[in-house]
Length: 76
Image (cartoon, rainbow, N blue to C red):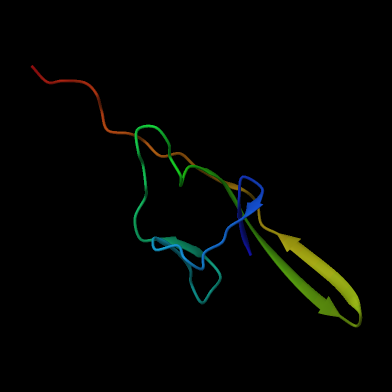
C-alpha cells in the first residue's frame, strides 16, 4: 500500500500513477497546476504480513516529491 501525506492512495482510477510488479510507485507523468500540485507530497510504502498468527507491518522511509513550476522569468 502506498500513502501520500499519510493518506492511503487510491490508485484504482488513477491514470498517471501505478504500482509496478516490484511494488514501486511509478508516475507516467507529473501533474503540476498553478493553483494545486496534486502529486507533490510525502510518499511512503507500507506492507502487511501475518506469520503464525502474528501481524507484521513494515514501512519504508518517506520520500518527498516537490513539483517545480514553470519559470515566470521573461527573457529580454
